[in-house]
Length: 239
Image 1 (cartoon, rainbow, N blue to C red):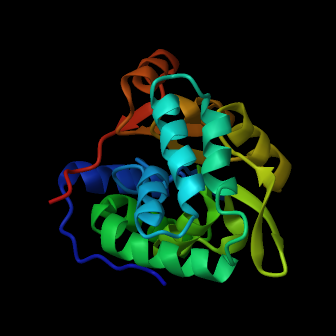
Image 2: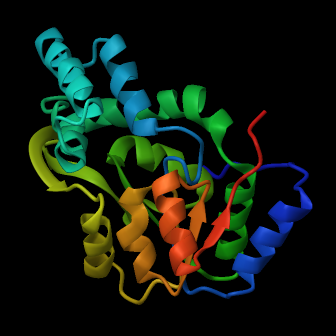
């Protein structure tokens, strides 16, 4: 499912899109939350599925308390991102995919940055390989990046092993910080030409690229981007 936009872009947006396409990248890698769309789809789906009773009440209570500890700095990023996925152990993957599609369509799709959507489509038209790398669960990212034409086998997100169609608590990967860069190096067949991210957790993967782009960066990432002369771009506001 490719989303389409009839958006009229600003001159700055058009200049940004054209400047990336002109690089003729063979491989382009995108972070997702805060880069392709505004907000954190991982956090959003976490609360959304709990409110709908998708996970047992005891696990839900533990998970909400655990996430509060994470926000307070008591649980590290990699651990929390993994636990937000392993808490779904025992749920059929088909239900997680269906729930993710419903969640993304109703909550996140209106937050897609139109120029990022246009950029991915333009890059695909010129033959670029497009990859998505995220520390959000694979089901929500799979639903989201389908709008951008990114294929399921070009997604590196937090994933668990699936047994007989059912999610387990056995993690396959948690791509965040250094592990985002490691996943790219392990899975991508050729070097990264352009890469896009928005937080400090994307810094290592951005450093892999010939042309790194900080998209609406957090202050921490912006300091790194300025110091390393990475391109900074801020998408237009979502109405």
